[in-house]
Image 1: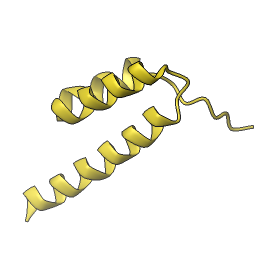
Image 2 (image 1 turned 135 degrees about the horizontal axis):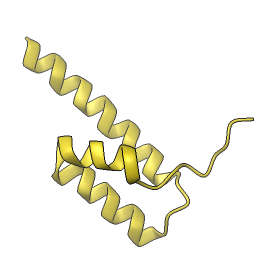
Image 3 (image 1 turned 60 degrees about the horizontal axis):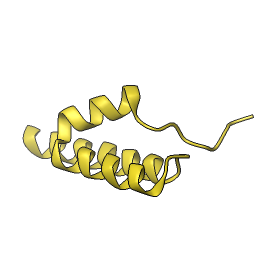
Length: 61
């Protein structure tokens, strides 16, 4: 059961990351590469993306 919860949590975070990548100001190639990195290297990809990935172009006022 614990593995299922972790899997669901990872899926939610990965989808959130991909949505943020697509909405970022990065080039199309950059978006594709970041998305592949997050998908191919699940834990490391998410951690690296969080700290150095492209930032969202939407600003909250």
